[in-house]
Picture 1 (spheres, one colour):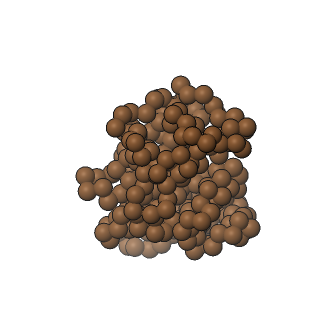
Picture 2 (cartoon, helix red, strand yellow; picture 1 turned 120 degrees about the vertical axis):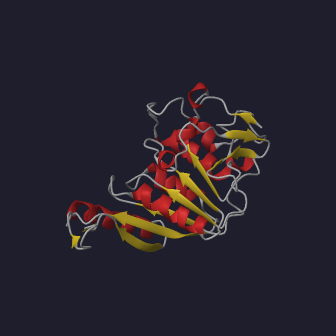
Picture 3 (tube, one colour; picture 1 turned 60 degrees about the vertical axis):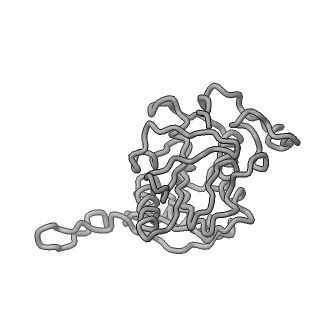
Length: 238
């Protein structure tokens, strides 16, 4: 295994390259098509998206808690962060500073423990520093998500949780399209009680239905404050 090169030292994928992938595996690890490596999601039993229409509703926290809950039950779990411009899963899991390794089979995700009960993949592992901005247009975002889905050696997992950015744009559409044929069970939608967030989450549910993704449930985060003394619940945000 060897370390992958810096993300920004590699040439950008072009639209022509995305439409006409090479017949032979491309030696440049960040540009080769998903089919070029034996990594991928074929051996994953269940895949769940975590969506939100509004930012700041605690979507990443919910995604990580779902993953940790499954791992605590003895399941093998992976978590994929496709929020390319604002990745935060690595920070929540305490994995900042970790590096993705390159093997003959593809990218090796970062494991959270020695038992390898939970693994994680995020663009945060590929950045030179945490303050580095990712300024990409749609085609390059699509290329990166394609590699996250197809080139990472996820192995046999009971569940893969995919944390997405807020909205209904390139990242969400590219992720769902790349998961065609995979065991995508549905999506968990996260919101907060504020009316502005509720309006946006209704749009997110509409998006999921249009894309043919089953909505497994809606999590209303920050719905109330529980007093540590008397246990009374105060609805702060509604």
